[in-house]
Length: 532
Image (tube, rainbow, N blue to C red):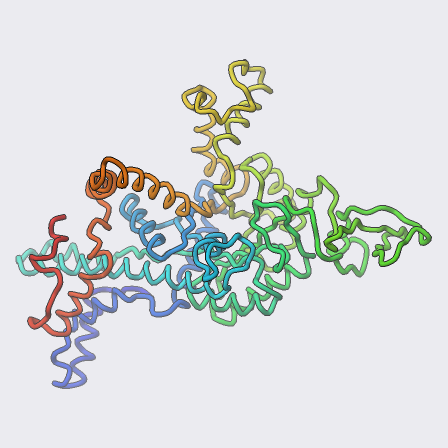
């Protein structure tokens, strides 16, 4: 799986070519070494095994030092994921600690043949592994493109007789940092029963997924985690799906595969089933203990009533016209803690607690309770665009200042989103809390991985709105040139040379490998990309 030493690979290719006599004389050993370096990952399973090891090492590093948390951004197209990693390498020199997130919400909204859909698992399940494969195709192409540039520099240095630069470039090739990173992939609630979950998980892993996130909602009633009407399943159902995913990893030889168990119990007040219980205090009994019930006598029972026998008492759960059962109000956090402990004790590696607001105290309180039983419990957390971050943190600062006795008479808590407060001391304090939220939550709330589920959905809409306003308005072509192309040039965005980004230069290299001087290449003097 390593790119190995460039010179060693070249020598190995030369020996192989020589072993075939004169018939392979036209094959260049160095070109073989280059093509191998540009195709380091042969299959999705190669990628899954490689990236799983990365995640495991990152988890261990976080356990030793909570400042070493990891991050990712959600994406819905291979090009978007590719550009994120190219930007990360450009600005930080390495992709260490930076992943990609595959959002089921964005797959539903942007990848379904039915058109835009809500996050309710109505889209084609095959679109999920297809997107994983697409993302890694683009990330591998980013590797090939960057290495191709280094190989051209190597040829130029060799032609100029600059042996020092030639060796420097060889060192860069030998120490090349790949764009291929872990993807945390959303399998929703498994798209069916445990067998369906297993089959889909296999496809996702074969496409390259080293980490699968699964939630404890009812598969055919699945809702977005930030919408109402969520329905959870008893633990035995959810744990069966966790085991199904683990079997899929092990069957395919991805022994380090990572499972993220997500609980939606904080905002889910309904269940479709009463859990099976065999003795007081078992997991099923604990699940049922949160049901909204009333004690009844046998003569109180009506036609079709369902009752639970608990300690000799007959309890009738509240059943809605939808045939769903209701949990008692205020039990969400307790149910989340139980969900998390049960998941970690039964094969999950990481937790995801879907919350209604970004509040470190709330998250940290639950994590503290979980860690009383499982000390190294850690979370993946959704820094969701569904939260109004500005309003939430301004309200948090307002409340903190009020408790401290500070004068907040100049602020109206109900109007804190107003632009009138944008330059205020309170706004500055809130923005600082937003800036440090991820580091603070990693330290105080056990969050190993911070992600934003839908960032490119929103950035695409925002940038398109800016361009449309300028281009179709009075600025015309200047709207594009000043707002897009000139900024690309000034910021060193590789995509300004879009022919190169699409693989044109890689194709030219191959033409030269295959045809030598007879190659008809696209990158000659007439190529307008030379203007950049």
